[in-house]
Amino acid sequence: KVFGDDSSAPLIALISGRKIMGNTVDTNPAVFQSGMMDINKTLNAISEEKFIFILRSGQGIAEIPEVVDFINRKCSLESSFKSGLEGTYFIYLCEPKNEFH
Image 1 (cartoon, helix red, strand yellow):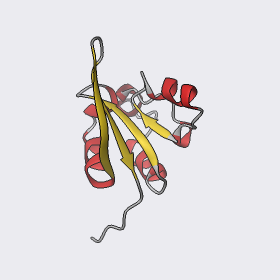
Image 2 (image 1 turned 90 degrees about the horizontal axis):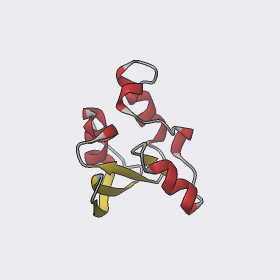
Image 3 (image 1 turned 135 degrees about the vertical axis):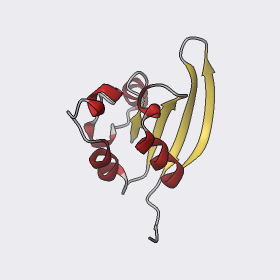
């Protein structure tokens, strides 16, 4: 499964035959900032499965602090590449982890 940047994750899911986590296709920050969707509920809902998280450097969903925190706690960087038009893309592998609080 995949999740992440709304400009690339749906296309990558389609091309690779993968599902999108939680069927959440529109991850534009405005969806969360407007209150239409809750970022914490969304991240909690996807946190117990293994998936690929796709981000663009400092753009889109990557500019939401809760997402950055999630990536730092649950994911490992697998790859990155530069696009002439869109900047740098980061591909993370996210897996459930035991956390002690």
